[in-house]
Length: 373
Image (tube, rainbow, N blue to C red; front, top):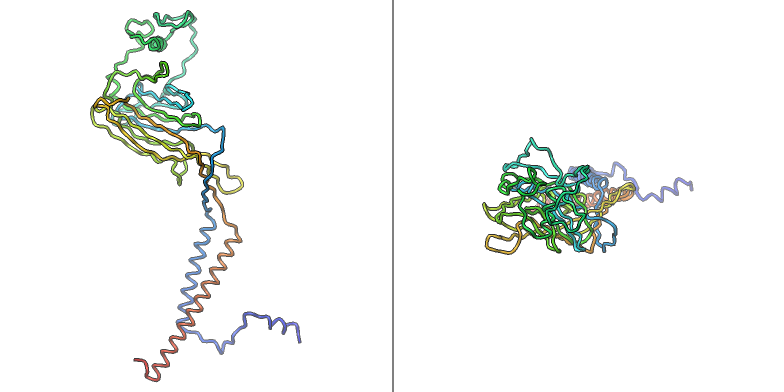
């Protein structure tokens, strides 16, 4: 016996002679349909192969040393920039008054259009070195013999610490420099943009009218009007980098309108969830960011309710971290799925073709003998 004859006995796919094969219209229809289904499924499998899958995990946050970055872009439609203070504080007691780190103000008119004649200014401009060696008088409010008040703000701060009333027109440092009427506060709008970094712990930050300062652990804003209209729009607020598919910026585009001559206190309670986004590939750098949920509350202060008009954001961090990891399927996985699709569809199509042929032959036999009712 030849070696070729031995191999023929191992053939699991014996070929049927053409004389014994019958081609039918039903079989052709099943072939066309099954081929179309195979092509569609392989195309969908290819799309799944080239697109990474996103796996989600939840574990205890053990990261240390990361600062919490707050990205903000808020528009106050009825309060001028010179009358807005941005303050931040955390649960450790650290307080940042009149924050000026990478935060800028844009003056707007009441229609929300930027004032072209005024360039964008930082909230608190950095003053040049004072070449004047003289020591300005604090008008009796100095706390020691070496305390100098060379600017109007230094005199006012010294008086606030003493809790004394001040007559600005009698202070030499304030002549020609402190001509500000609180009535001008409502003739413009302001857009505040930028970011600040705070300690990674529970805390808060707020926008409120008037210059802010602290006296004996009390936080105070110097503003003369009780009714302050604080219509505002949160253009953007996030705690880290923005990820489109995650809830890193749920407040973006929120607009809050206030009725005329009505002072309100707006509170936003934020629950921050640390998030790690690991991109696919060996060169993908992990992205540390934060998602957050929000609960809003507003208080009407016109009925002698306790509180201060302003926009307050209070946040606390979750002890759990969410990890999103991209994973790409291997080519072997793609090839295996393609083989499964081809084999499975052709097997089912063969069964359907046999059933159709047998059914059609049975109907024809009954027609020939006239037994089909």
